[in-house]
Length: 238
Ligand SMILES: Nc1ncnc2c1ncn2[C@@H]1O[C@H](COP(=O)(O)OP(=O)(O)OP(=O)(O)O)[C@@H](O)[C@H]1O
Ligand SMILES: [Mg+2]
Image (cartoon, rainbow, N blue to C red; front, side, top):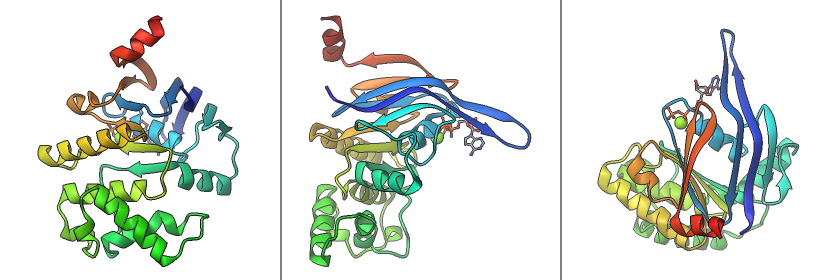
């Protein structure tokens, strides 16, 4: 199995005027291509911080990070943005859609920042493809605030997928949703993983964490427990 994410000795310290917080403390984590990893733990334990570091939105204070075979700890800001755009799709609890743009234009956004030159026709084809995948092809010309919460999250998923990233980072995807919409989102993530996407999802919800193949727990900035799926435990035992 190919290692797509390898964090070694990652620490993250936040310093404010009044205090120092050690959000991550010498953490090691390897994620393999095609895996579906959940990270759960109490509020403030460092889950979002870890996801930001994996997603190159923030840098660690210490440690090394190899993403898809490349050491990304020392990349320039431009290379980092390029790497992020090409390799990583984000899905957030609060959807983060732009309200005065149509659903179509929201989904097209990552393509506008991509280094690949696409015609408008190609952009529209890709957008339509991913909107159909999340069952929202008939809502392309709506504005996000004309959709339900579950539909908005599906738009956010289409946007995260449009650049065909190698890894999807998901932070509390169901936190703002009723349980029925939450279930739909989880089924969609499950299907994406079955079709080859590597997923790393942060969630408080232990029921949803069970959708993942590898369940990790974060406590005081460290990974404290790991339950791999039975097949994988067997592999390790052999
Ligand atoms: N920009 C920042 N400046 C200072 N401290 C921060 C900053 N970001 C996070 N922290 C602190 O780091 C710790 C970890 O925060 P983080 O957001 O990663 O937690 P979390 O596990 O995602 O929590 P939640 O489940 O509530 O979303 C917290 O104690 C938080 O106060
Ligand atoms: Mg968080």
